[in-house]
Amino acid sequence: MDHLGITAKETKSPWGTPNPVVAACSLADVMSEQLAKQLDEECNIFPTCPDVSEPLLMGEDVDTSSDLMLAQMLQMEFDREFDTQLRREEKKFNGDSKVSISFENYRMLHPFDDSDSSEDEVDWQDTRHDPYQADKPTTTPRKGFVGKGKNITTKHDEEVCGRKNTARMENFAPEFQVGDGIGMDLKLSNNVYNALKQHCYSEQRRSVRVHDKKEHSTAEQAVDPKTRLLMYKMVNAGILENINGCISTGKESVVFHADGGSLEDRAVPQECVLKVFKTTLNEFKNRDKYIKDDYRFKDRFSKLNPRKIIRMWAEKEMHNLARMKKAGILCPEVVILKKHILVMSFIGQNHVPAPKLKEVKLASEDMKGAYYQVLHMMQQLYQECNLVHADLSEYNMLWNEGKVWVIDVSQAVEPTHPHGLEFLFRDCRNVSTFFQKAGVAEAMNVYDLFNAVSGLQISADSEAEFIAQIEALEKMNEDHVQKHGKKTHFTMSDGGPPILNDDDD
Image 1: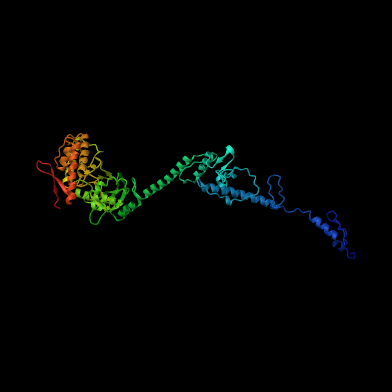
Image 2 (image 1 turned 45 degrees about the vertical axis):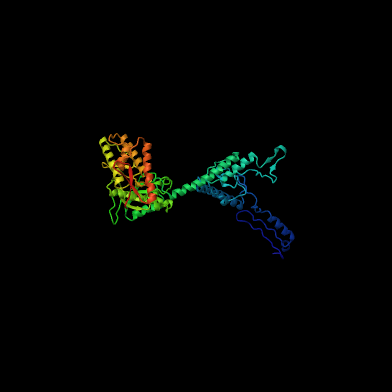
């Protein structure tokens, strides 16, 4: 070894290839500045790291020698799959709804994506771009017009107002169908727009009224929540076993069939009916004359609100049925009354209601027997029960087991009612017309039937004269009541005109 130097001896490789000989260098050469520069140049030969801020290129000619570039490409492919799955979830979540929710904020954004796949296409609802919005928003300057000379356009221009009116239709209620106007240059005049706007407001108010009416009123074959609760309470109390379904609907009530239960004080029929008086006031506004002038309810009628008057209808039918049952007239038997629900016995067998006299086909002898039953019933109703049905017809009489049953007596009034005799004359006309058309030769005409039922001996040459005498009797009765405060009933003097007698009670 030389002084401060290194010597290398050439050795022979056992594989036959000589090892390279390393030249000896001194310590001064190692520490020299020239050697430092040489080492620095040799270090610059290695590749530099790419700038991650530059856009990534994809394709067959892309250099993949850098691990960082490979990682970025894999990450972008993973993000693309994530966006595709997110788009599928968005479509599944929105479905066919008109109001859609966008998941755009959860997508991965990349500086470059050259995918041409159809799955990457985004619907306009998933973007922030509104196709209804104008490309260049037009604004009217403060002076109120744009242009010069003959090309002046004001804010009242027909086309400008038409487009504005079309855009304002988007502010209508969601339930108001305005259509889809994408790609169409629609122009609505002020008259058309104002008419549509007014119609939209009226439809909103109507829908609110209809919804409120359905919630608080008894509709066709349905009941409101309060009525349904009353029916449930009857079942829970054991009065009824169950409620089967609707039998019929009328102007003022809905009738349900039910299986009877039990009561402590009396037995309940095996089959019952629930007559639910409708809580809507439309049908009762024109029928208050049957109750406001009835002396039994006249004092209470003026003190009740309209909805409680409907309960009075149910109470009135209960009292009328009780009075008829006491006289032996065939009619439903009252079980119990709960507000506007009247429970009665069922006329029929095995859940099948008895047919109406209008619907049943009877032989001539049976029809003749039915006529005499109706005649006797009307006389009993007037003379023993002191009642006039006021709505008697073939639709309110049932044929059950060879006998005529009377139903629907909520409007029945006493003969002393200001219009009681008029109601009786109308009933006689309905009965006489029906049985005469049915071929009953013994059926009396309306005048003879009226006299036979009332006991009066009114004679007239025409119907107008007959009704005039009836109205005169009613006027005499009304004047007498107002003067003396007592009810009167009509009797006939021997061979003379009708006279009025006071009731002793």
